[in-house]
Image (tube, rainbow, N blue to C red):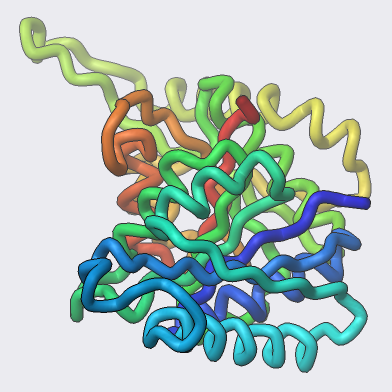
Length: 284
């Protein structure tokens, strides 16, 4: 059987949105759906909330799972759904489940988030550390544009993201818009250096076409639109997300702690994008 799509749920509006997105994707991919609710007694003090049936956190998890399962079955009744409650730290539990998942889907911010925070710490941590694709979904998403946007650069780290974007486009029957943003290099010791901007732009455009060539060949039925933008990648991708059903990015982060693994562009895009965001890195 295919690996499941795993959804982290805590009963929040963002978690419900993530469940609905994941149910649609499971139907497209022919994957089962597994709903996971994590009970974190440590955060509240173990003596105050002892583990076991009937404790407030477990009861809440059971209710969250029941609501998520109803939402998934109501949206995609043909998708097999299972549910489990796991005790531990939510970010770590979901991160560690990457090895058994086709992808992990989480809401942008759970019930424990701070007001005004767009993407919560759990979502950021999972997106920054999980070895499988991680999709972060905000409440209110709608597939209304018929296009998948993917961020492209020269690095090999973006190639799994390109592959994921083409797969999503093929399964949805829509197109891919590949966005590459570039800026003039700054030479602190030689500020007088000048460039032929038009020539550089054309060079970047050819490089993007070459980068996409293997996927154009392997997915001939997917329409592709290349967009080479002079500007900062975060601004370009955020603007492109206004007209996208999904924004797909790779990750260049190589740090060891917190969200540093996510990379600055991917992390900023998570906070500013107008559509669901998939962070895709090479499988370890």
